[in-house]
Structure formats: structure tokens, C-alpha cells
Amino acid sequence: MTLTLWGRPSSVNVQKVLWALDEFGLTYDHKIVAGKYGGLDDPAFQALTPVPRVPVLEDGGIGVWESHAILRHLARTHPEHALGAAMADPAQAAAIDAWLEYGSTSLQPPFIGMFWQLVRMRDDQRDAATLDGHRSAVMGSLAVLERGLSDGRPYLAGDSFSLADIGLGSLLYRLFDIAPDIGDATAGVCAWRDRLAARGAYQRHVAVSYDELRVT
Image (cartoon, rainbow, N blue to C red; front, side, top):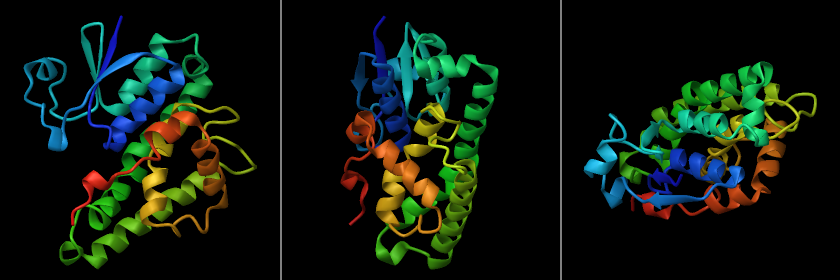
């Protein structure tokens, strides 16, 4: 059954799914929609999701929406893969799920705030106090990740690469690009970032230009 991913590749949430699809070794069609590309009013897209945003994965006629839900769907439908097998083990799945939720609730919102201030706004639109608040929240989240990576743990959920690393690690390229010094106090996070950056799928889908999002 052919998979179809709907979403623009410049979206960090779409990048999570692109990264995962490559890690699972899956073949898929990619319909580039949203943002400047439009397409969210396509009836075929609207039939898949009640929410007009990306990513959406079309799999056998069903629509799976929300990036972390898509990651879990891929794990459930490919239990033979190491990423899927980890989610079939209750202890591993608990750790992975917790990190995915933490990424959604605590790390990504202030990261998006920083990104908007520094990339999506002109200089005269930025607010220093708002930016400082987002930066402080991101640094607090990085400190939590640092504790999670303590004792030399190579990946968030343990010794093996997992969906948790995709869900949260997809933010790191842009985060360290817009704020190169933000990880100065978190050596473990920086080492984890470097491990992720060595992966081919990360290089193809995450460590890419986001110039189309810049406001000049």
C-alpha cells in the first residue's frame, strides 16, 4: 500500500515524519502543501483530517494527523523494525512516549517562539522581552534533556535510537543555527545532537535550508 505524506518540507513537524519514513526504509509519495504552496483546501486533503495543517500521512485510505501520532502509527504498522519493536515493549514505550509529550508541551512551543522572533519577523517587529522569555524556557527544557542524557546515555530513551530522538531531535538543527550558544551549559545535549546529525536521514531532511521562511 502506497503511503502519501502531505506537507511542506520546510515545516519542522513534516521533517519529523520525513526523517522517520527514511529510518523505517519506507517508500512514499510526497504532496507538498501548506504555507506558500497552498493546497489545504484540496478536497482530497480535507477528507483526511479535520485540522487544516500538516503533516498528514495517508495510509490505505486513512488519514493520520499530528506528527507524533504519525510516528507512533509507523511504529505500530512496522513492528518488525527496531523503531517499531521499541514501541511494542511497555517499558521502552513509556519512556519514548514521555519524551514525545515533553517535546510537544515544553520544548517545541518556546523553540517556535524563538524561531518566529528571529526568522519570521523583521527586526522592527521583534520584542526583546518576548524573545528572552522563549530563550529562557528553551534553556530550561534543554537542562531537562541534559538530565535525561546523564551517565553517558547516548539517546533519550536509552541505549538505542528511538522515535523520541526523532520527535525532539528534529528541532536541534534550527535551534542551534539561530542560537549557536544556547547549548553551552548542556554538553550531553550537544553530544546527542552530534550523534543525530551523523545520520543520513537527519542530513537529508532536517539539516536543510529554511531560507524560504525568512522574512526580509
